[in-house]
Image (cartoon, rainbow, N blue to C red; front, side):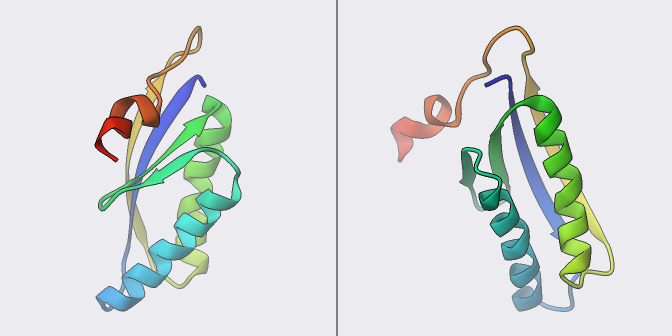
Length: 97
């Protein structure tokens, strides 16, 4: 696995219930990609090929807008190692779960 991306999607929403509904749609999309992922309280981390993860990051914004958000902000963290493997989710936090 050459990349790991953490995405925090922050759609504009009138209340917490609507915010959670939209974020749930984004997480459902990430789940549907088939890549290994981990949902945390502030962000979701996904592992896989760099270019495909960047496409997923872009699509997450579109998902939030299609789900009804008038706008969306996202905070992205990327670990990329084209000639090797980045530390996996399991290796980083497995001992804590």
